[in-house]
Length: 337
Image (cartoon, rainbow, N blue to C red; front, side, top):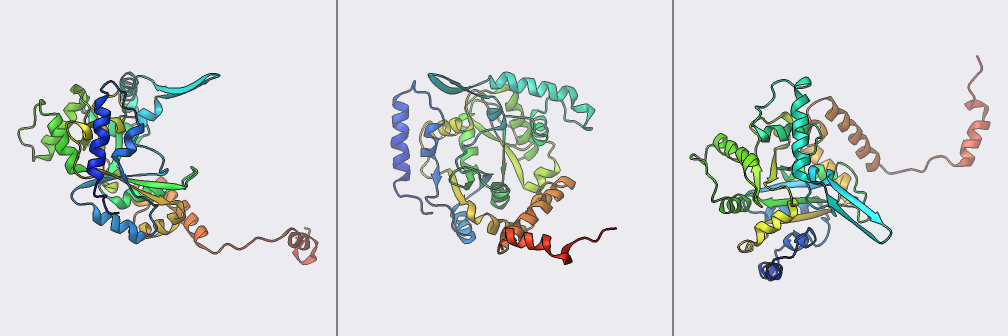
């Protein structure tokens, strides 16, 4: 979609209003103002490819089943507590730092009983990646460098909410890294920034010692097969007591708003799900290729059958009278032994 010519001015004006009330709790609600979202759901595979052509530079992607979902880590979702009383309702979060530390300790305490060759105790990024892999809530949010992998994860399951839309999110990695470096200027930078191992160790060290409203790109020192297959990595917020969306907004506000969109979102109508999954399967993007192992292969068999069933012309089954005739027809009776 073409970027509106006044996009930057509109965002800047909105950010100025937020800054004018410095005591205002930002919350997640304003986040939509910071995201350039396709006005209409993607109508075709070709339209999806055209959207990708608009993204210049280095971007990362995330697919989500429901278009109405924002960007929340599994830990943020797990510590959400909703309440409802006769005269009020709302929500709050358990202390993310305390709960996250507790989960890490308990995982490290027992993981050796199930897994060999564990990371060193101070390699937090690899520990969090391992926890994420096995379904433990963490402060990491999964992203991929492949928009096609993101599309698969958006469409693997049918959307259930009223609009029946899934979504692809995209973040400009060049902007994120540049902005992160500005906001972390006081931190000790690696002496060899172009060395991927040195950079990974530096970012890993930030997880245990830095609390700033910044999101960083994490490549764990010990990646697994899934991450390689999915071209995956993690984005991680360096403070607990704010959501991923809030920190992204903060980075886009201070000191100035970006001149072009750096967070984009593409909605995909559920009616295109099977068509798109067929395109992805032709590219060898399916559960078995993204999740090496028997479980991934079995899930692929299930989804293949769903694609086949929903891609066929549906014929009505036999009527009640047809079933009655079948029961009454001697030719359909099973002979007695």
